Length: 409
Image 1 (spheres, rainbow, N blue to C red):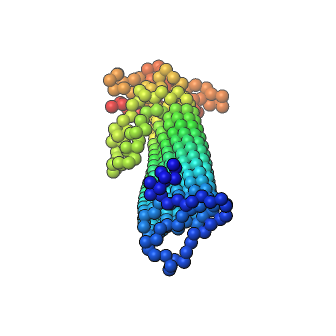
Image 2: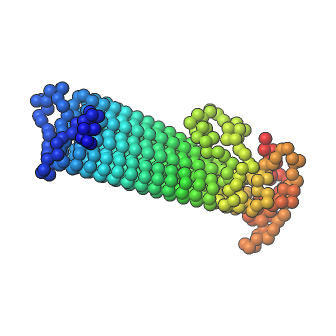
């Protein structure tokens, strides 16, 4: 019954014979008429060649080598460890069972690894490549590709073009390569890289590592205990739930160590970026809702080089690094553990306090409190409630000049 079904779908299959010899169904090319049927498969290891037409070929059992040639081909590896190449035109490749190697070739292809540990490549063109089950290697190569690892611990690399990449389940290593890429680690503990270009990186669930690389990158940690590294240029980093580490790297970075921003807002901002944003316009686009900071896990933040802006979360430890940095706290801290700034430099860095403008402006005060290193910390209070601690700044911080009150609206 299954053979009749395959024949009814227009698939070319061979008869199953009693031997398991390796078969080669190849003829001299100058003897093959253009209208000839594609070569047929057996239960052995076959060499299957397509024609200039749109062929449908099934490899059956054995480790087969299949080439589609010209035309929009449909190539099915079936069982065995198969090598499948689409060739020219828009092809569909299916690895099936086994550890397969698939290459879409030219034009815009769809490549499905299936079961097993596969190497699936789109080749040239704008391709869709799916690893499927197993620990797969998924490659986009040229073009603007859609890549998904699937189940298992996968390696997914976009290469050239503006790619959309998902790791799927498992502990994946996913990277955008060149171009402006959208890269999502998915489930598991993933390593997510942007490399060149302006990239949007999201960790998904699990304890992830996000590396922005070159370009203006947007990194969103989401759930789990994540490490976010902005890399070169001016990046935006925002954490989710969990105890996270956020490193801006070089450039003037914007770091949110609080759960202020909805991830869909970040995606919209990345996919439709307006030009020449002012800080006020950026705040409006991000739709900052300071009342939504429910992340009570203390994060570690290092701005790195450049003039960085850091939004403090509950219980965070903040280091501005080199440059003139802005540290922002607010009424979302009240009633919780205050954040700590390790390197506030008076006359260079700025501390801002954001408050609900429907309420009266808070009274800001400072108390110098001795610390274990023999110096004193500046303990900052809003209406008598501690909202920030500045290490070793008790003797230098001036509450009248070093803090700015900022209404939330």
